[in-house]
Length: 337
Ligand SMILES: Nc1ncnc2c1ncn2[C@@H]1O[C@H](COP(=O)(O)OP(=O)(O)OP(=O)(O)O)[C@@H](O)[C@H]1O
Ligand SMILES: [Mg+2]
View 1: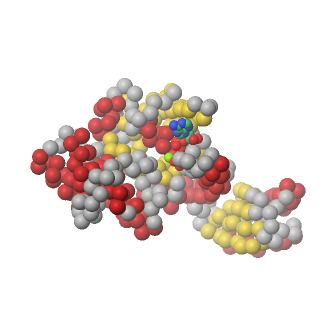
View 2: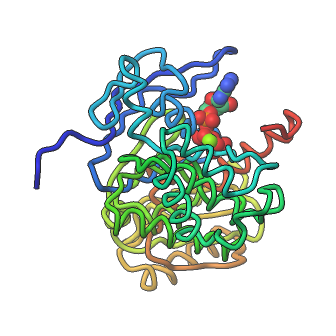
View 3: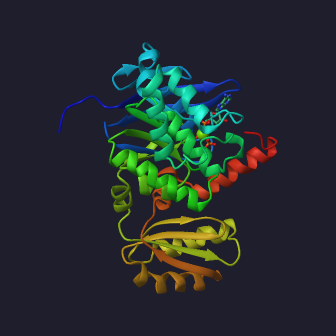
């Protein structure tokens, strides 16, 4: 192993927006060269703000960050030369063709003549866009457009690639194709990648290390397996037929605490999640306790802990609840994003 500096290093980034919105609240990030870090978090967690600061598009209120050894505040021009950025929203010109978009991007980075032609042709080929190269981007499917976005980010052969939600809005087939492509960039080309995602499955699949972001900071970081491994035993989830009241919750909590082999109980109105040394063995006792407490059960599952369970443990809330809450806020705010 070499002792090269981290490809990305951010220390204690703080960023507030007008209206007293704290977007980042002590964000720390390290990405080693040639690795993929997945920043995983729900709406509004601060993922895009982090990417904007690291790619010199926004300034933090305080804290420091360096990419490929260049300070983002002191040498933004040097940083820009060595990074590729795929923003959350497509940056391609919809009325230009795919090839025109790539050629323009190449020229902006100083490519001309044969070098430009070859680079553009290679990227079109690699992202399966050769046949569509002469068509206006506005006629592309979501998957094609996103592949073009990634190709645009790679024109100048960056050392570090930032992918802000590369697969959001894609259908499952296009998502899988994009995963394969990102996997190849990381594996075969040794690119350093920082990607943000809402999808636990995506982080699990693509990232060597995952950092879970909640309210503008990292709450836990590690390999997907180490995070899951920390949650020893099984995750047992029981869906209740009817929501529990306050009194019912307290009663049930007491009853569950007394059961052997069960640890880390988490109660919602209509869901009980526990971790058990042996989920299948704990299930009868768990269901018995619920029955004695007069709580009807709609469904029960035993599974290996997922990253969702990791999120619940470290953020103290359910990933899906945070997403639903954020969606509610967005709807109240008129749905604009
Ligand atoms: N330009 C801005 N002006 C005001 N507030 C902002 C601005 N950009 C982001 N915010 C707020 O900062 C917080 C973090 O936003 P950010 O876009 O970084 O989150 P995110 O994790 O990328 O979310 P998403 O998953 O929805 O893309 C949110 O509360 C957001 O509303
Ligand atoms: Mg975002």
